Length: 441
Image (tube, rainbow, N blue to C red; front, side, top):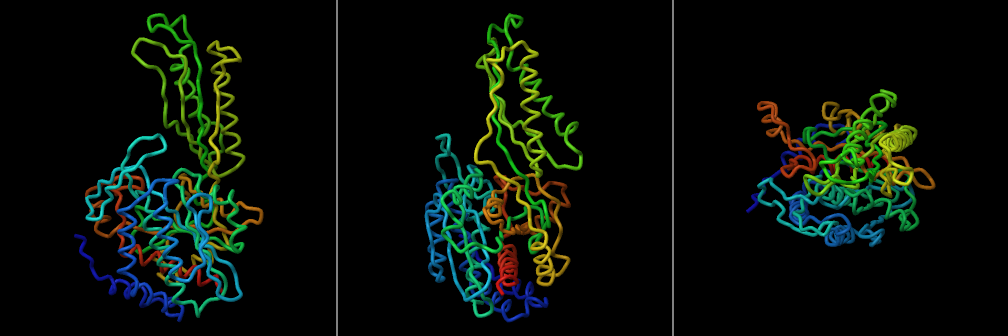
């Protein structure tokens, strides 16, 4: 059985000696965290034990809706699938949107936690898989609900409209786009700003991180079918081997970033999958490649896609293939645009975080090449300033052990990933509440 430890002293220590926390509003936030801590831990354990895959977040979405309704939010459900939005109007003022993601990963958990997930489900390929919150979306949702509770408790100290959006299907990159295709911004008050956080596996728990510009990269999923002319493995001269041709293409693609892209522009090309052939002695007719292309600049993205097409075409022609058998290239839609923080908004919130936690607990973090579809919340008819920040979740003991042994901490998407729930949960609620309160004026 999970044995709960009291975290009230930790909360008091976290909030007691910082100037911003002494405002009446932040005192209310601290009260809410202390009062709701046990309930929020219980919520976290429930979400961790009951993960749901992308596009399958039915029970998770229902729980988020229930929590928001109990706080007095008007809730709109089934936006682009299992997406939902909670709206709380509190007088005249700006509209602040706070977003969480909800989906889990097809992964069998190996943390040995007393509340480890034993859930299983069917993935998009029809296979039975384990399911785990290995990207911390369970923590994101717990912070999300904790923030909603704190801001309701402190509602006498802010003015405006709070919009809480719970988004499905972040992991497959489709969730945000589906919500907007279903008219999200037409169903809610149009936001003046949008906020989100993401847990960070190696940043110390109790701290936050930021980047005032490029936060997470755009991601394109590319598929290439390389055709050839099959035959017997003993007579390769009578064939055009698509496996050899694919190998040439893969090596050629690796020169695009190193020799064609400005070294000051971040970009990554990864060939993550190659499938071709059936047995040892048959040269196949085709090979299928799956790639991810990552960048921040639209011009760089365009250049990478064009260069891949150019190299694939000319290597195929060089191998002797006719125009009718050139490689077929497709890109999955919707793509994931780059998440780029609004500089002015981010620096404003950095000042809030430094005042709340102290400068030693707030760090600038380099841009990441992973993707995050929170970017869709900015890229609408009227652009919305975004700020997504990092929430440290690496526990002190885990960091110490890692430093002593040289063994890296479990990363996001690892079967052993286990964030330090305390003080990460209260830090996340404090940070997001402080950010919202600084804007709801």
